[in-house]
Image 1 (cartoon, rainbow, N blue to C red):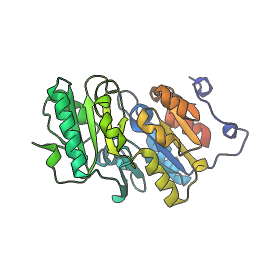
Image 2: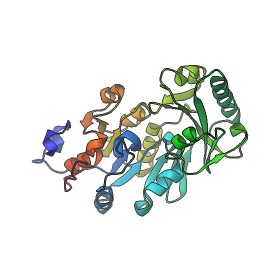
Image 3: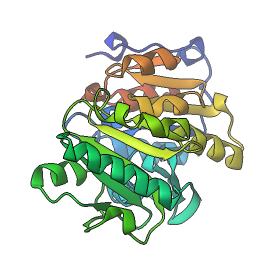
Length: 292
């Protein structure tokens, strides 16, 4: 499919007749954005990352996934890359922590107790307590662990997830039903003091109110002297909303949640159509990747 036939809205500065746009930072969500629905990265990703490196453009994955998972997925191109992990609560570059925003232990205990009450009441839900060193779970059934593994390559089954010795960055809840209608409302009491965000159709995350992907991007921009006009951001779900506000070049994927489409300045082709790389190539005038 020719690129011009895809659902992409770009401002006039992206017109091929104009000078190339000055982009210094590209931040992208992973699931539903860079990855296709089968959780596969575009085959041209490594070539594009090398082209960006040669131009001095910093590429940063921003995900609800843990740092260990992101570092493994980008192992062949990880040098110098900034990983915004755990929905912005943990930011790492070349193995060095740039920032983190851990939860207080009493909050961890209260959220875990809430999840246990939901499960006892018949909700098919489980908690993933996300620490700097590992993720921790109590559920041992294969159906639940199969949902945990893709996002938390480092995870341990423990007797009590509220008692682990680690800095806890967030608590992720996997609800086998619609999280927006079941688990998220049950956590409403925490929303007054903490951030409760639906990060996928079945996932809800509880973090400090000061923590989100947008806060992590703004901190990175400030530290590196990069402006919103020099920043390009891609997202598809509600945990990407604040991140979209950090960039003049904010793109919702064509498959994005309606609220994300309303919040973003521009629209990119869907994740299954290689929308992130095709948009980067279009705006920065790189060789255009093929659709998937």
